[in-house]
Length: 218
Image (cartoon, rainbow, N blue to C red; front, side, top):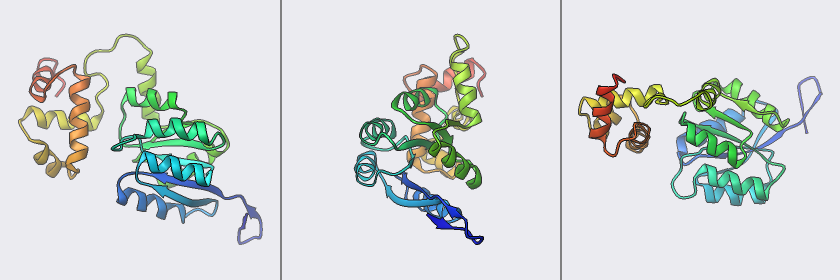
């Protein structure tokens, strides 16, 4: 317990941050210092390390990236929920992918948030998760509603970022050129392009561009 300036006790929520990008981890770690009730007790840069850290520290809440090399966040969540039953896992990711959302929910996450969330809103979500209440980004709720509302059209589940990248793919830009134009890493662009190809039921980026033009997606 810590005390506020008025002397009231504050219950600190013990948190582990999991993300393979050092800049994201450091940003989240710095955010924890802004709130008296949030206590960063550990971090990990992979799913495997996350499982080990959580088993050792038994944190209250884990902020879990889902797309990581090796053991991804979904698999790590499954293991953490099995080994640390009192730990709540909050998915914190850049991807609004319906299949990824469904897999994460099946694995046991208590919430699914996007990395564009404001610090105060993330802190509130952590408190909700610690209390055992589910928290979902509005975009996630919309995607889940779409997933049960009937047969979707090809390309319906493309995110705004994926449509932006698809437009550049259709114009003939390479991944490196897209990364430079949108100020993204090449690995992030590659992941987005892979998602676009899969969502359009295509086998190559050229085929994806053809489908996009035919269906007027860009």
